[in-house]
Structure formats: structure tokens, C-alpha cells
Length: 544
Image 1 (cartoon, rainbow, N blue to C red):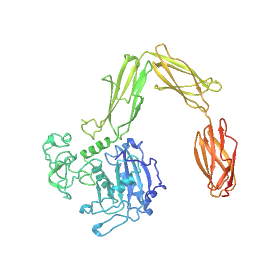
Image 2: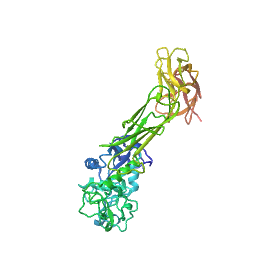
Image 3: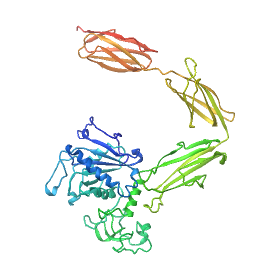
Image 4: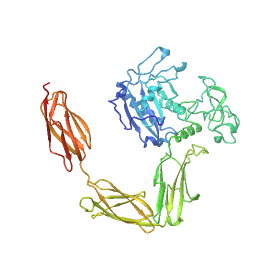
């Protein structure tokens, strides 16, 4: 769902222009902001069954629930992986439907108990929920908080839970289903013969090698495991809506009992799911994949997402050989230690949390490589930045030598210089206040670089054409502008006009109004160094 179309990316959205009258009342808040939505797991919490008068109650309710979620492992450890939004859309009535009691209310997302004949199975109209959530960029999970005191919840396409005292734990349980792909571990026979082939926390297998969580089971644990062992991972009978034949990993877990914490298997599944969306390293540098070095040291680095009480392992490798870098997140490259030619420097960053055992698929590992070209061929580039109309030097102009990261600024005479640039072709990009950007290509060879002069054109401000239309035209005048910039404007209630933001060049200005002729019919205007003087037209009503 992360790549569903996003409409807005601001924190508070008041959609007064929305075509849907419901959307016009939506209030969206980003209550947890850990960075770019495209680099985080994005949750959206919708208000359901809260009237316009209950906005404060919604705020109080979601604050209590969200605080509970992020005080619970593994959410508290990996909170920095998550961005969280709330969306408040007032409902006409409070609560949810209770068909078995013949109670029906008018709410934003059609919440109802008694779904599929199960009294506590609380669902919503997923289509409406997704339409609302699509206002949030890159959402991954939709939570729906239902303003009803009766216990209920579900986790199909959305995570739905009612606002009871246990709402936080219901949310965690249902999020376990949706985000961790976890099965129910209780025995109540709501559904028969569940499909358990792709869930990480229940199984019919009893042979150790076939148990999905075998890496968590210590050798001395008997299989199946007696209920007297309450604090170890094993194979406990009773799960997946059946008291016999289906097994769970631990004596108790939030997927079996709301008040319990997640067991190790379920916590691991949630962490791994977060990692399918979130990369553990936010950024690295330099960003260029290929870098040429001569004799100046170069610092390579990464910036991982912080994990609460997290542990990690960092490995650096130069040309396939691991180097001792004391686990640092940066590495200083000494060009003198490299032979001439191409070298690959690679980093592996691995989350070594004890909450995940084994990582054969490398899901919790990030790797990045830089290609370094070591050369002794270098040269200098120097020159002057000049005004094109006077050949006067331009001071404090910024000169970039692309594709390198070298930057120079001109002195008071317009002089700049780059020293020891590796051999190659560079584009000098020049920016200076009050001048247009300019570019020039320069080559550095074994014979050195070169001297260059780069001329800048003075920026010209946008120009205006102003004027007056004499004569009363009740329905207004349409003014056509043809030229370097063409436009049409309608003048009504005023005889004066102002055509703005024009570039220099030649223009034709032509007024038009039904039932009128104008004198002159049009005017030619040339803009060069300044806005022209006011022009005028006379409107004359046609006699026939």
C-alpha cells in the first residue's frame, strides 16, 4: 500500500476545495514524525463514530492508545522506523452499528459489529477507509478507532478496534495480524480449519526441523511442551481456533491473551515486517557512486536510523578484504594506501537485535559500495568570472566543478582556482547574485588544466505593461497579449490594466469586447531594458 497515490504531504490538511463534502472536514495531523514518509513505515489512524462535538474525545483517546502502543515491545524499540498520522472525519452519529440489537448509526466509515455472524468482529467499509487514508503520502497501515465502548476489533485490510479500556491492547493484537501476519493463538472456534501455511506463530508440525520457530527452541525443551513451562519457547498445543492439533510457540502471548506481551516469535515477525518497508540507513556519503582521489584523504560514512537500546555490527571491506575499523560508521580513505586504478570500498550495517534470531535472508542488513579511482594525474583550473557588458570581475560568485564536489568562490576581482583536480572533464557551473547561471566545460589532462574566463549575463527583472481603456464597457474587456510571453486577461470594473511578469521582447496588445470597437485596434510594444510607458485604448460602442 505504500505506493498508493498520495495527494498531500503537509502535516495539517484542511481540504476546503475537495469535491467530496466529507473530505472538506478532514483534519490530518502527523503526530509522530521520524523523517521522510517514503523512508518510514507510515500508519494512519482514522476516527470513526466521533461526531463534530467529540473531537477532543478523539484526541484524548488516540493519545492514550498511541502512547500504549509505543510503550510496548517491539514498537518502542523501533518507533524511529514509524511515522504516525491521525485523520479526524466527523460522523453524523456516535458509535457503530449493532445489527443483532437492531442498532444502526450514520458514521463516516460504516463501522459494524456482528460481522460474519461473530458478535465481536468489528469491521468498517475498507473502500471508504482507503479513500480517506490516500490523503496521506505512502501509507502502509490503516488503523480505525471506533468510538464504541463494546469490545471488538478485526484486521483484514484495515486494523479496526473499539474504544474500550483495552483499546491499546486490541490495537496491538490486531496490528499483529496485519503488520506481523500473525495468527490468533486462542482456541475459541470462531473459524474452522484456518490456513496456517504462511503464518509464523502457529503450526501443525511437531518435528523440530519442520517447526517455523525452531531456531528459538532450546535442545532441552520437550516437544510438545507441557503447560507448566511458562517462560520458554516450545511447542504448546492449542491455537488457531482449535484446542488440539495446532501449536503455538509460548504458553501465553498477546495473540492469545490481550494483557500479555508479544512472545519472542511474534515480536520477531513484526520487526521483520517493518524491515520489508524501512531501510535501516537513512543516508550515506559521499552520494556519488564513483569518486576519483589523488592525494587528499576521503571520508566515507553512513547515518543509520537509531533504534532504542539497539545493537549493530559494522563491517568495512576494501577490494574484498575486511579491514579493522573498530565498528565505526565512517571510514577515512588514505589514497597513499591505494594503488593506481579502481577500488571498491563496501560497508555492511547489520541490526543485531536479540529480538531477531538468524538472518539467512539478510533482511536486517544494509550494504553500500563506493567505486574509487586512484590516480596521480591531476591539474589546476583557474580563471575569472566577468560581467558580459563591462568585463568587470564578479565577486563572491560560486563556482562548482562537476562531477567533483569541489567548490570555489571568486575574490573581489572575480578570480577563482581549483587545485589538484583529477584528470577528466569538468563542467564549471557559476552562480552569482543578480546574474544568470552560466556553465563551461573544461578538461584536465596530464599536461594540466587551464585558464578560463566565464562571462555572466545580468539578470533582467520581469517587466510590466500598464495602460488604460477609456470608455465604459459594462461587461468588461478581454485583453489579448501576444509575444515572447502570451496571455489573456479580463478587465472588469476598472479602466486600468497591468500585464505583469513579462520578459524582454516584442508584444502586440489587443483589446476585445462584444459590441465595441477599439482605437487603436492594437498596439505594438517593445520591452528592452525597462517597462514601457502606459498605453491607452478608446472603447467605442458599435452603432449597428
